[in-house]
Length: 160
Image (spheres, rainbow, N blue to C red):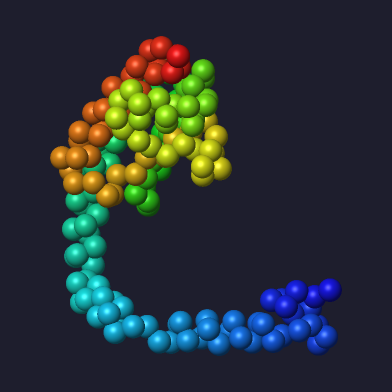
């Protein structure tokens, strides 16, 4: 039978689809006044505002890249990617440390720093780190803890 959400011909029921289109239409053409004011401020702020905000992230990105450096050190076997157009970095964990959820749990318990296990994002054996939501001082502190944890992880060959 045809789905009420997708028309597969003249016999398909369109009642639900018609109602959903009414809701969708209203959402698109009737933004709240607050949303309109925010959008106007963003437009009036111009490209310089955006450039300033992005420039403010450069220090955090550099701190996080340094924190992940133990994974890419000679012989460690890890890799780091991302950050060119996003506010996060991906890091492949080295051999012997592929249990990303276990690594994340260990980093939290032993080093007081939290990252996202790659398994949660469809990339087992990796970790995901974000650098946009912290003030530079807090990011530097967290990056220091992460670097110490990853250095220990690589040196020990795992969390055990």
